[in-house]
Amino acid sequence: MHASRSRTILKSRQRFSFIRFIALALRAFRQRRQLSKLDNRRLRDIGVTREEAAKEAGRHVWDVPHTWLK
Image 1 (tube, one colour):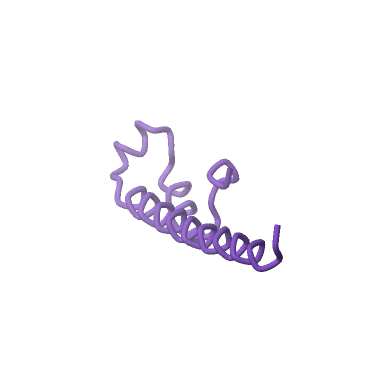
Image 2 (cartoon, helix red, strand yellow):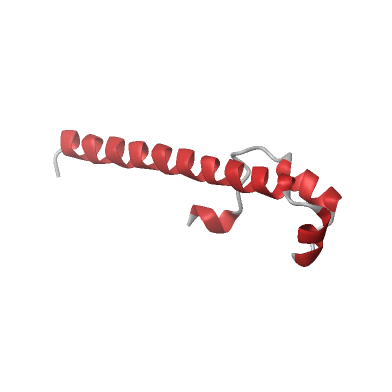
């Protein structure tokens, strides 16, 4: 494979990775925002305390579960 073709493929993968990362960060932001808006009854239904929900909602958008990165 030619070097220029390899560079093109690498750039394409990097671009895809960056777009994927942005999508994951947005997904985490939205889920955490929704979690922070749940009332105590709904939090209790899913087994999460208000403090746990606040801690999760306060995490950085790039701090996503490792399983999301596969």
